[in-house]
Length: 413
Image (cartoon, rainbow, N blue to C red; front, side, top):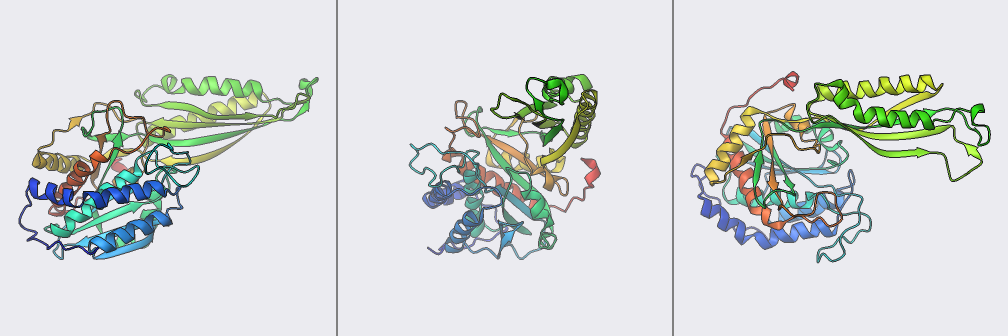
């Protein structure tokens, strides 16, 4: 159905009640979109169907100035232009799901076996779409709001693909804001932090190459088992051994493979996979280089060759002081009381790609103290977060749009 909302004077600040009433009026439509995305999840870099559903919803209910399809590959951007000079603000969500099975008891259970929204990106997309409802009736007083539906966050390539799209510079984005839901914290609790918010991380696979032999004569080959064991033991202790990595440095073995179910062959190859995390990009580089050097030394001692491959690199997500200040102003205007967290979250987010290029900030919303964790089979996004998330992002964009652009150099991060 087409929107019947009449735009108000953008210079007049809408009241909290007006915003809440408007979201309540459209809540069933926003919830249906969330459940529709959940029932029809898409894996990273294959989100065309999700983008189609979001675009249909937007065109039927609101009037974006412009919609950019295939943005960054399979993403989508909806631009709401106030028609007045000001800063242009990105409000970003992810739209990819995970290669997991869903909980069959859910009324909106995934209809696609082996694919499910177990990180809440369907809920984040619903939050950003709810912002469109607010923008439709209460436009920004200046600048543009860019609702960015980003693909491929889970694999760490989506934000870079958006930034590499030839259309991105034309948006002249000045600010970027985003959020994530976080189980283990009270429902609706806002969590913010200046500076590092999520760690830098990447995957590392190491192929160890020796030589096979008969299992009765392992000395005639080069079995990588001993080197494999030494690497696992050595790598996991590297963060504390190196020092200076705070408590965030972490090496997690994720896959180990050597040989086959054959008892007559001493294998000659093995592969190890790790996820490596550190508080910032510099510390991650130090840790990764130390792992490569240690692996090469261990391999050389056993007469083995090493091959290294990098996977899923995520930069650190580092909130800028200006971005955090705008969020605090927004929360204060809405009467929300955020909690400032003392340490960064352990998971990574490619939103950091945007914050290396423009000011902004990322925050979290508690999903409930006892809510199932992210990436677990029991997880489902708590719909109660949608109004608070939408009001927070909308208000932050309204404040940021009226500010002057802050120029940052990438070296600051």
